[in-house]
Amino acid sequence: MFQALADKILTGIVSFGMMVLTTTEGNNASFAEMTSTFYGNRIVFQTELVGAFANDFEEIFRCGKEIEIFFHIKIKAGNQTIHTNVFKHIVIFDPLEQNFIINLEETNLEITTNSYEELIETISQVEYEFAEDLNYEQINVTLVSYLEKIYLDTLGKDYDMMMLWKFKKPKVNKRIDLGFDES
Image (cartoon, rainbow, N blue to C red; front, side, top):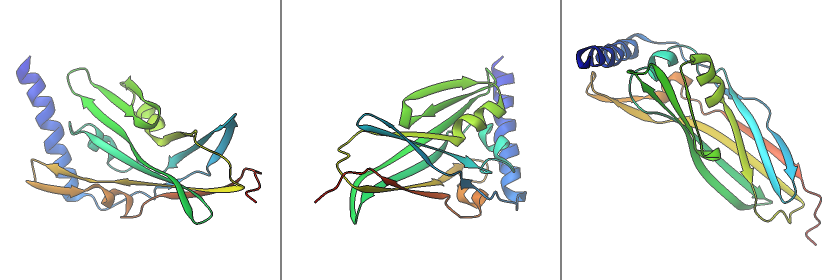
C-alpha cells in the first residue's frame, strides 16, 4: 500500500518536473468584470479569473505540492488607501484519496473535490467582503492576482509559476459611487 502511494507521488513529481522543462505555452490570464453588491454597510465584490488554468495546470495541481494563487485587493477613496489585503486560494492534491483540497482564505471555506473542472471553477471565483466605514462619495477597487515560485525537488531549484501566466499579473479595477457627500 505504501509503495503504491509512494509511486503515485513520485510519478506526479517526476512528470511535473519533466513538464516544467518542456512547456513553452503560457496562459492569457485575466479577470472578468468585477461586480459589487451592497448589503447594508457591507459591499461584496465578485469576479473570476478567466483563462488562467489551462496548459499544464492539471499536472501542476496533481504534483503533490501546495499550490497557492495569491490575490491583492486595494480599496482607495480619492488618493487615500482605506483598505488593503492579500489572500490566497490554496490547492493540495491528496494522491491517496485522488482528490483536491481547496482552501479559499477570503471566505474561510474549505472544499474537497475529485473533479478537476470543479477545482478550476472554485479557485477561479473571487468573492471579497468589505465591511468597514463606507462614508465616502466614491471608492476605487483594484484586484491583482499572482503566483509565487515553488521549489521542485526533482529539479533542485525554484520554478517561477508566473511563467505559466506569461509573467503578467491579471488585474481588474472598479469605481463605485457610494453617494455619500464628504463635504
